[in-house]
Image (cartoon, rainbow, N blue to C red):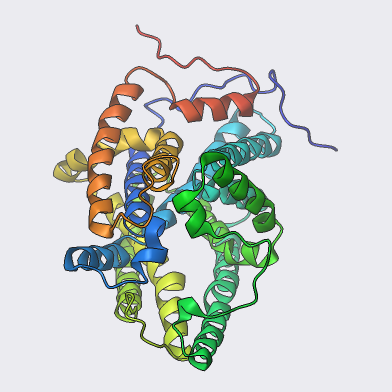
Length: 422
């Protein structure tokens, strides 16, 4: 039987999860993930071509080491893991209402994909939304599978991503270093064949106007989406989502005892392995000093940091917060993040807008001039405002503005946005 997308009348109840149904922990984790990804983006990722190629002043060097060790890769891990849990919750609610859950989720994924494309057209670096929309569809194949089957597939995804994301690039890095030695130049100055279709992104970020940057980013998107290695590398997203689905299948979403048990069992291993892997990665990083690396050095660094350390430590953070939020003092400290997490998509896109406005030439044009310490300072100020704004908004409205648009597309009708006062 052919499955179609749900029309305007296919889903009768389009209300959001009520306050009594919501698991505050998930909103808190989403809010913390938004802060962590914003910090990495502003302190490292946006300017990485610059900060990794020069010797930094001491405050910037210490900031970069701190972010690399405790933040890089950890919070996108939490966000992806939560995406899998969110998928489980959505499917459970759809099935309970008698909705065609497959058609519902396909339409939801199409909506997220379109939001991602529109954001890229606005020059926001938001490719992760497109990856979530694509790889999230893979969760449909495992929604009703056993926890054992889910965890087995997650391991397969991680192994494939590790091979294509860490091992193969290690060999490519060694080849690049060999070329640099033969030409007597640094790795960044290696002369390679020039593709006439290649875009000088650094120049475009610094000097291109809005339309030039938007056109280049949109033109690049089909190339990314039709490249097999990209899908193999990004399988880590599906692996993390499957871990979230696994936790949901174990009953940890609504059962506090199961949630606590899983967190307690996993925490020592995740923190120990994760911190150890990230420490190895940071200790082996040259931080712009131009030190040469052997194949073994590069491979160990990639495997310890990218493939294992970052993901394990990120999940360790989630496990630790799961336990800490049960304590009154910690709950008071963590609760303000919940409003940010309730409108996570809106807040995520806002952080990418701030980064684009500061960096790209259509805004302040400071690309390459914002060093890690300054970037992290900006994050603290902006996120504080986000917390206040999110609390103000959620006291008056049922969804964040982008969440409202996404929900409108998913259900084929415009849900009420403003809260009904008694």
